Amino acid sequence: MLFIAALLVPAVLPVNFGVGRGSADGYVDGVGVEVETSEDRTHFADNFTIADVSGGEGYSTTPPTSGRHWNGWAACGFYGPAEVLADERILHNLEHGNVVLSYNFTDPDRVSELEDVFDSIGRTNLWGVARFYDQIPEGTVALTTWGVIDGPMEGIQRDRIEQFFEAYSGTLSPEFPNGGAPCTTGGVMNPA
Image (cartoon, rainbow, N blue to C red; front, top):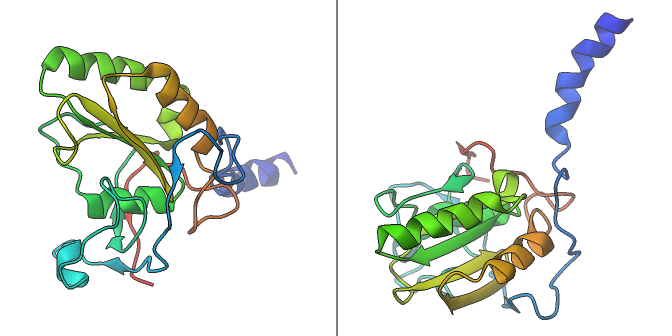
């Protein structure tokens, strides 16, 4: 009997996406700005860009908060300026209920300081992706989750970043509405 229970545990654990989730059931007044989301969440192949599949229109916010995106998503973590994570990639993370911190710092000391802040926030290991993003002004940070944006904000505002993760980690996931899907690994889904 104990042997059978041991076999069942691994099959049950991956389904528990809600571990470490944020506190929001929807948009939280005063924590970012709610924006209209695109109804089109189509997955498309990585050899196309949003401009290719949208007739050149692109996304409605910078950084984006919803829309068509690539089949693959990024693993949780802090990505340095040399590691490009395209909008089309991170939107899949947002669809899973992840939070994406986009930054535009060129000073290595500022990048290191932001990485320390990011790593010290408890939910980032399950729900957070940080990426360099030159589409926002230099010296700024922006936070996004599905349908919510905060920033760009000047500098590193730890309390504001932490509050966003506290509210939205795993909570606004149109693909996994009952608890999101942590970004502990990257991956690819077949187009639906």
